Image 1 (cartoon, rainbow, N blue to C red):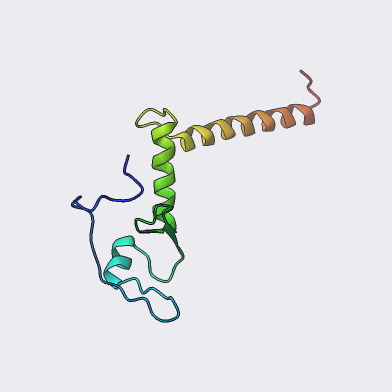
Image 2: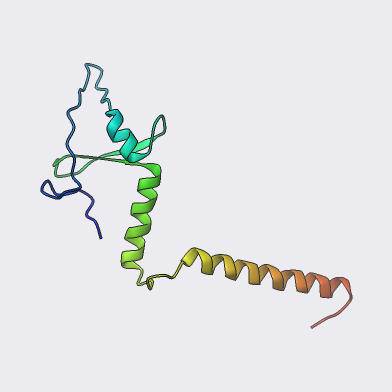
Length: 110
């Protein structure tokens, strides 16, 4: 499970020089936006409590991180999709409800 902050010596860590203007605006370099797959969309900026640095995540990155965190702690076997299971359960429930309505309309009782 990847840590919330990459360690400085890991190969996936990249460093970019940025400017923070007098209004406090931080310009995220184009190369970073391209790596994140965002441009003109909202992102989450987090300062860790220990003030070791900033983390910036696009919404899709945040979603993927949350999914990975859930998967790591939910004891869900690899290859199992809880979303697929949920959809299958809802479809089965809907089919039962439709069958009950059909039976009711035909005057059948249980």
